[in-house]
Length: 114
Length: 114
Image (cartoon, rainbow over the protein chains, first blue to last red):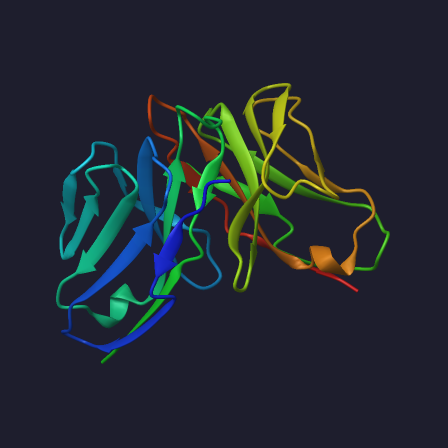
């Protein structure tokens, strides 16, 4: 069974601080996605990474896919209250597993205080 | 507007009373999926469908049924709901591409089984 471990589970920081969220697995994934979910809503895709070692930037958010495609990180620079939410990583395995089976981590609940 | 629509948004029912949660997407996506989200357990896939008349079990299919008679609709059926099916349910759709399964989520259905 493939698992994605996210850490930390909870993170409470002050506005302006930097933070990193980690997503780790012992399995190789074809691609890894990061979603953000706000209360009362469904998750919304932030980014997809496909190539080992890939780095993508989305304004103050930087996403990295590990060289071996087993792990990923999300780094937020100068966090703002609007970044508050639940961050989820999700892995797709198009090789060994089923193409339709998307595995989600349990999420990191981020709170950014003004 | 591209969207995934779930109904109802909130539902309170009693043990054993059959219910259906509807899901409809207007993006002509081939892939659709159902998840449940529980505190401490994250998002877990119930069933998914790669195309019309093609459905597969996810990680937690027990107690649920689905059907995919047409591309846009993917209802979730609970034949005999039990209290352990109290949860927040999400429907998602995706246009699968090579290595990617980028999912668009509905707003969620909060179900309570008494």
